[in-house]
Length: 311
Image: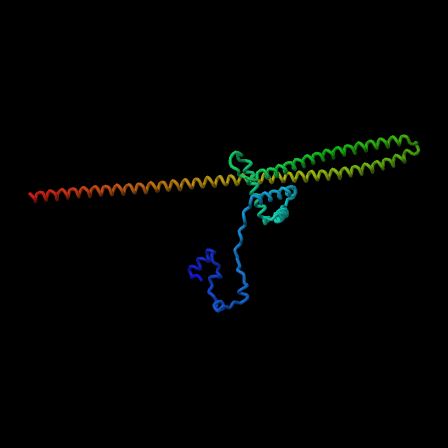
């Protein structure tokens, strides 16, 4: 169908598949075609390019991420959560892998931080600033609420332990009053039983209070660790963002410096070429003037000779 050189060029450009460049077999020439040849589909081994994120897809992605914000804050390993985000995106008609979702979220956070620190009167750097700001504001409110709850639980624990101590002291005073009211013969036996009972009740109450205080302290410690890790992660992200901005600024300065140097070099070359052209023009003008002078002298001598000959 195509010549050798033209066919190879078309195959490289992807206009014609390599199967069309093969010569026809004897079966095709004779009009016969096997079923396998007739039914064989044309395979396209090219990998389809991933489409860009549209505005609607990005908004759906931010909404899904906002729904799972509490899980992301409480969990240390987010691989499973990103798989959940990918599955929910697939349910809404968008095919994105967990790695793509994670990378997109990092880019959105970086753009949000850039918008947050830049001048709001100049240029829209982040079109989804309002949605992201709502997510981070909700995160800050939840962290403050957890802190307040941990402080309230610690105060309640202290109050409960104080009440238990007051109750135990009151019971001991009541037992002492009852022992005084008994007869002198039954006083030693009842006093021992009352003391044993009081000691048992006090030990049970103290053990319960210790268990409750340990549980609350563990919860408070876990919340404090979580908050500390969250703030450390925020600081690391901010440091990485600042380093990236500084690196970009340095790269831009280097690029501008190289551009200036290249422009200066081109300007020097242009001046050198222009000076050489002017020198050549000056030499050509001098040659033309000398040639014109010689021509004038020659014409003058010829005219004088002709005048003398005519005389």
